[in-house]
Length: 315
Image 1 (cartoon, helix red, strand yellow):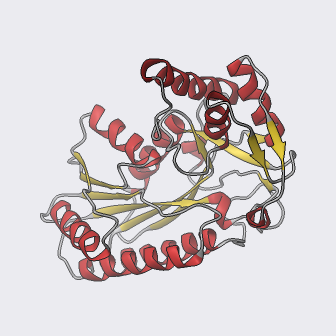
Image 2 (spheres, rainbow, N blue to C red; image 1 turned 120 degrees about the vertical axis):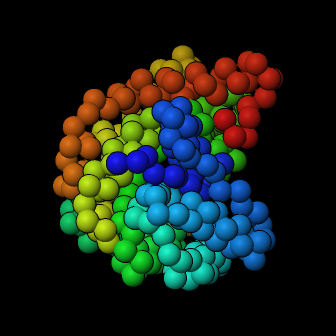
Image 3 (cartoon, rainbow, N blue to C red; image 1 turned 45 degrees about the horizontal axis):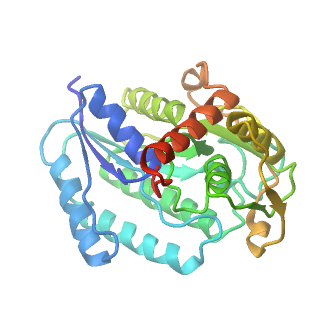
């Protein structure tokens, strides 16, 4: 089969940037979507043009939608704007004629299962979002599922566990490994608003990229209009106390961690262990061990600071 032309939406972000670099390095015809996100009308026009360009011929195509707004504590109004943007883009591209194609939508396992019962969670677990972030992810999943079903495109919804590794956007108040490291290097305390026993599944960025690519390759062997939801997780749970210990070991120093309270803590699930029951061959891999991944993340942030005298807002 001819390698598909590939568009990466959100290539300026953590996952999207890593996916794009991996595709280009392996010789795939992949391009980033250039999107003026601050202007919705202009953003819609740019996205519609980019999607039409990659779907313009009879050849197979891929669109990897790795863009996303906000974090767990973000208000619902921000996600309402994002939902309108996605709806407009999908509506304007719905009737376009194209060859066979596949869409990947990056969702959040932690967000959609935040209030679910009986961990570890997999694709058969009932989603129960606690925050507007999780409700927005489920709504976007449905938007892409409807579009793919009616256009004949294949769809992969990747519900991704806690991503970490070099390249995380340090301007966003998320990513505990990076944020703990950043706070230490800047000489300020880290604030923790949930119990130290709070558990997450940590997935190293390189593993995530490989899993996304393998999942797409497998789903593209299925008939058109196939829709697959896949939990992308490492099966390596760690508590906040474990994360702090791993960062301290990598830094060779104690962290100044202060426990406090914040209203957004009510949106956090306490036990978000993950597993997958779909496409098990994707999970049959040697994942980067958590201490090794933490050390690589710390070293990357440290190295940038040593080279520039500052910690880059986007490391």
